[in-house]
Image (cartoon, rainbow, N blue to C red; front, side, top):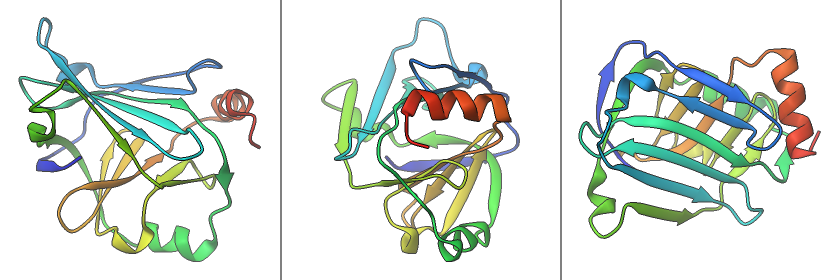
Length: 170
């Protein structure tokens, strides 16, 4: 999924952590009632599943939901440090919706890996050149502004406990 524009500034969000759907982050200011939503689904071979909802009118992300978490790896210190060195901007990205020309749902099968230093889902560390913070979610972009990773951060101990139990991975 490609970002066409980064609108800098903080964005308000709310999050729900529970046993059945581990992480759901909502961006209510991007939601416009009665406007169609597009759904971008990212699934890996271990069936870890992320769904991003995009408003068809303003092309903004309304929700990011981690539907399931499976097969988490340890991130080595070099990988983590590499990510932290990349500048991060607060923003509310506008999404290029051309991938939804034929359907409101687009599913991408990807070989992203899930790491547990915080909760990172990344396709290729070496290609990350930009990061956008949308509250407790970081979007990691390649040189073409294509999202190639997600970082879920800012969870307290109780929320992490629920996430761990729901995914049965720690």
